[in-house]
Image (cartoon, rainbow, N blue to C red; front, side, top):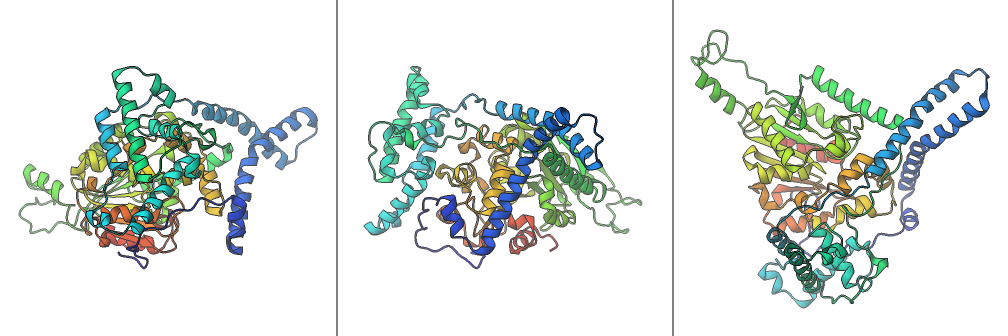
Amino acid sequence: MAAAAPPSPSPSPAPSPPPTPLASFLTLTWRNKLHFLFAAFLALFVWSVTPISWLYLGYDIALRGDKPRHWFSSVVFYYSLCEVPFSIYLLSLRREAQKLLPPPQVSVEALEELLHRCLGDHSHPSERDKSAEHQEEQRNLFRSRARRWFHHKPLEEIYADNAREWLGWAFGGRELDELRADTSKKGQENMALIEKGLGMLEVQLGHKFTPGYNPKARAMRLTLDPVKTLQRPFGYYVVCNSISEATIAWLRFVHGFRKEQHGLCDFLVLPPSSPKPQRDDPSLTANGHPANASIAARTRSTSHTSFGTQPILFLHGLGIGLGQYAVLLRRLVKHRGGVAILLQPNISVSIFSRRYFLHAPNKDEHVAAVRACLAAHHFEKSTILSHSNGTMVHGWVARDAPELAHRHVLVDPVCFRLWEGATSFAFLAKRWGTGIEILLGYFVAREVGVAYSIARRFLWWDMLLWADDLQTMASDRLQVVLGGNDVLIDVPAVLDYLSSAGVPDESVTVIPGAQHGQALFMPSEGMKVVCRHLQLEW
């Protein structure tokens, strides 16, 4: 393990039920309490801009009369004139986000294979030969992780139909009553699959579910549950989008990136820097160009695939856009092998984008766009760098277009072990008890575009990345970077999975004490690791 905190060979500690927000706050250090209070104040302040604008505009129209306005009052008045109609528009988007999408069309055979991979017994023979105490530790670990989907309710409170309800969503995307009422052949096959899954779940848990349904132990079902959003002001979007557009302008007009559309996706592309030609090279003409077409083609396909000068495809994560990656971008712009950045406005609060919200491309459209972009610039073998939600897009490319990638660098990967619900619970259901949870919860998770993407377009089994999808696990072609204090990822569980999948320790780095995003948002030990594996200047 390339870190100061290697995973222990003993079983990972079972995740405990999350404490209440008050209990979490009381256990914080004074510094973290101040961080919590600052984050809470900031979120409340931003949220309050909208109701204050409504109140001020109502007061100004109803009570001010012909009194002259002070310049500050004029600023507030005209801002409120923008804020009020925008808040109505945003409310309409939040309501539209609640609409359910049709269930995914997946063959029963594919779902059954997925069921076996997620809930089957894949322990190594040496694990099965271990003591009963060790096996019970593993079972308790599975129980704790499975209970996340039921908001950490005790296992005894989760009844059989609660488990069927979760299985019906997880492996069918539908309500349990709807599946039971479906008398078609496929409907019957789906119900048979759910019953099979229930049996497998009971075996793994070592627990027989009580018959019936407990309404107090409802399962978390992302694509069927109400979409959780919170209002935010017009000024918030103006500031965030201004930062993003300023970052894009800086990349384009200062560093030579081009904004291009391929398929349904937009990219920022920095062409590779050509080395200065040698004047005595017989393959070149007097002005330095290739002497014939075959040499030109060969040059395009090989000039930037040598070690250290491969093109880089960057797949960003959730947040406020490219501005949050300024520290990384200052290093990427110096890369000579070419850079392509996939822009994802639906997860970047880009509410003014024409491809925002309901119109984000799907998996196949993303892969087709990436393939077209890399082909247009003759990026035949690339290093794919992905972060957080971008690791799911990374998985799409790795599965459906493996020929595009030569090396993989995944930072804060949320794409592993998605059937255990660690990231889904932490991002969408956990009560905020720390400052970082407030910042992630309000400013990211509850933003309408992000919330819609996660809650309505998130097919966990399609976003799931298996280690064998990456083609290679050699340390010079694969690097997974994790933060030791990541609040969104069950780091011990990911380490267990990668180890059991055969990923060598040299291909995984854990940064002690690091939070989610720290490796790419700021100068840090994680940034050094990423730059070293990308062979970027530090």
